Image 1 (cartoon, one colour):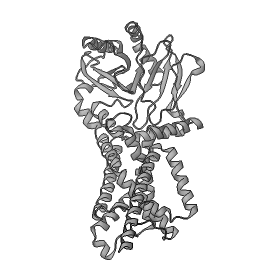
Image 2 (cartoon, one colour; image 1 turned 30 degrees about the vertical axis):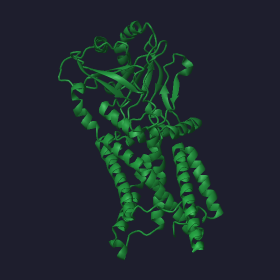
Image 3 (cartoon, one colour; image 1 turned 90 degrees about the vertical axis):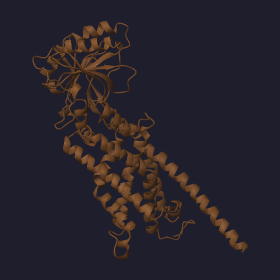
Image 4 (cartoon, helix red, strand yellow; image 1 turned 120 degrees about the horizontal axis):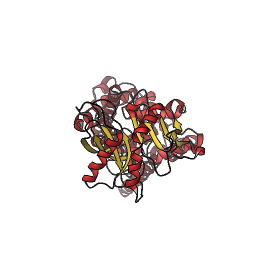
Length: 473
């Protein structure tokens, strides 16, 4: 059909398929670059844990031997170091004792100058109290600067909260593009034959479709899990989880016995939160008194079942309980947490992963699988292969378009007008529902439609101009 005028002559079934094909083209053309960047940055992030261990080995490991010093001494050594560096305004937020022999202890400090879930972390040699490193770390995973930068690049192109809409747009459209591609593959020719097989563009399109269908389940998985902690769609997912009571259990640090258990509703990784700095003029004196309990808190947590090799102790706010949690996101997952009364060091609240609702467990596992840490290097390899496969699909799509000499598909309205009335209602309802559930998708769809209307207006104007010239002739 010519792209110079709107068509209403196609049969309904053909019009519906062509409408879907044109929509698929729009997504690939306009959102494809976002998806490619998300896949590439995700690939880099998945491959960095081992590189990070090597790059920051001086901070992470020690050759010292002997009996480790107390946690109080280790935390005090970190505070003394910051005071000497004229950073005494930082408040101690948490401490991660050395996981094992040869590892350093992480003493983490918070301040308003750091972003959400960021800490300035001082790495202390448990035996000698020497400062082995001073780095910014991020989140429950304790990501170091390299991986933290790649994480920000993957999520928001280092542009802050506004930048996160790029990755949300990519994730929101990715599953739509895959589902549409599967329908087109299932209802169209499987493989170029005869003379068509000799055409490189036809082979590229066939490879694009075949690889897309092969990786479809994995791609949809990464699309949906990526949206679970996105800006706008993540908020809707949180609201839904709250409404059905499927939030992630978390301990309460309140000493009120009526508030012993809280529920996290922060999307994909609710534990990626740090305690706020205490705005208190007596901060130094209070922290000094608090620190004296560190070793007893660690002992009480071990007695309560917290694994000391993956233990993080969070300092309490005034009048609140200590919070101690596990931070292992590998398999088997260890994310148990407890709260301890500062006066008695008895457990006031507990959240055990074994008792989490099934949905909360699935979200925990799928998020960790998405970032490539759940099963170690096999998980990393699978994430890397999926990212490379997705980039290849996009590359083949653009190569096929290049073979067509960058010819644009006709406007969507060219096929919309040929749809039956029930089909129009179904498509409109789907657009409204999906656009509401995934706001980034809805906003970008509105942009698509504006572009489409402009193209229709240009085509109509060209058609009138051709008609006028013919009448004059």
